[in-house]
Length: 65
Image 1 (tube, rainbow, N blue to C red):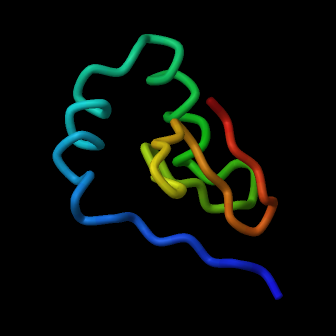
Image 2: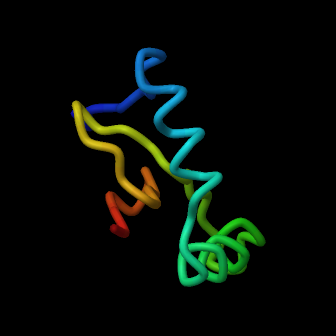
């Protein structure tokens, strides 16, 4: 069975700050991923355990850091 991850509310402020201070490369990549041109839904600044990853796609089990 696949484990589903859920964002922890304790890290909400940190995730928000990371989104506001993203690099140009992260911004460009996010513009492509959010347009769903890949056919998959991606999450930005998603936490898995105690780690916050830049981009996460659950169906693909893909993390982009």
